[in-house]
Image (cartoon, rainbow, N blue to C red; front, side, top):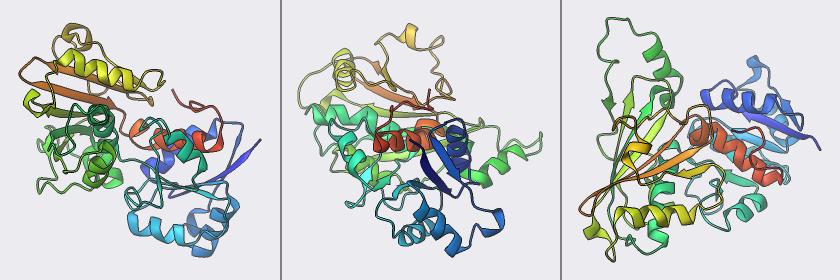
Length: 316
């Protein structure tokens, strides 16, 4: 069977990569909009309603506008913006979130694609909240280092056009210092936490790759547990998941001389989760490709689940 797919916002970073994933597939017919009609509401509406799947790779306001154009009840919308991620009428497009999440994605015509930082944070912390080891009222401190592609076209241009002598773009740059990052609502909602984390991201001088680090103190736990048990709880939660790899509790085996490679999963839809530390303090680190499992790869994975085809089709 062939499915018709329209990418609304096909010239953005996420849209371009979704097109790259799908252009290789024989079961997908890509509907393209002429570049001079990208803002033509009538043409966008026609293509959206002609499609089986429409991906929204747009700013929040434009994404909401596109949703208002849908009148075909059979069109499934997968929104990569932040507009609908905690909207109860939408399904969160993270298949590994819970045992019944795939069933929800398959049944839904409105799917919200997770944010990149949020995906890593949620996948690392949710198993511990679900197991009751981490009380829901815990406030987690976390940071994330990410490639500059996560900032979209303007940030990509800023880095790639910078003069060789510019030092400002050669070092990591912390941002969102008001501690009100747009991913906070989904990070709280889908971990099961009742308190938003203290979260501070950092953009690095590399194109893509992302690692979220969460800081844990055993005093936060509901009972005594060391890092190896924490690691086992996470491993049991994701047993059998193709795209999630829980690394062994082995500093030498999981690092390069003590350094953790943020770019190790680039070009893939994989997530690695590692636990480091000791009985007194621990780190959880989840790494992924911010343009893969953090954006376009996740959107294609959710589409595959919704359509009932092989979940990993077109992904690595």
